[in-house]
Length: 336
Image 1: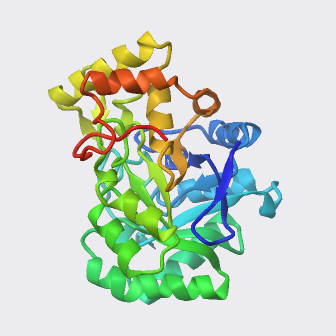
Image 2: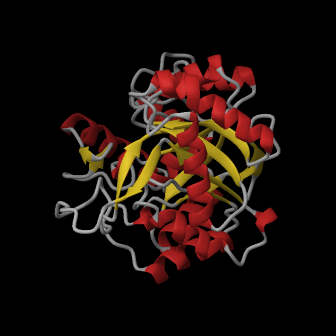
């Protein structure tokens, strides 16, 4: 599997990365044994970069990922986690609501507290190292600082920069579902990488307007998550999710038209989605959330066979992708 380094660092990632939100019981519970087998399957497929966060299952994702990787040589893989949410234990007897906890099917033993202070960043990294059972983290992202810009740029980012200088983390960046603030991080700080979720896909190409050109010009890397826009590009059907809500009718219709074009070339829509998101020269890896060995193997198999050039031509001819050089708007650009 192809590998590349992030920005000017020595941190290496494979073109396919394992997103560990799902094994933190995202939306529904995952058996511990199945979670471990999913990580094993990723390893067997050549995946050597793994992404997690304290937010994912109130630390469950970090614990499961650390357990699954413990027998692997530490120098043979890289791992990213995130800062910005501190997990505070709840006092015994605290009433908790029924149902999912911020999207995760886990017992509510802690509460998430936003903290982009310098002390909060260091505490978050220390807590993650304990949950993961590691002594260093390869990539640390500021996680969803949308409503915390002043603290993120003024306190959290300098703290990450210091941790990088100390060797506690190898690369630093920010991870968000928007492009404007990520572009600001590229312009105003010395981040190595940004994680952009859902904004460089077949249905939303807004990262192409400024973020990806800025990263390419500055020699920084972009990790792309949410390549299926929560599921619509994996299985377009009525009720399919788009960015964590039911897909609007116009986007569903567009996804179905894309599916017809890709399948006419013998290519699953999800394969076109993966290859499209990986194609830009600034993109180092696509991050795919998987909860089972079969899902991991499917993603790896889809990446092994690039779609034919005629597929992209037909998508453009149908008005489903913009012509080369045209503004991206809500669409994505051509493949590399």
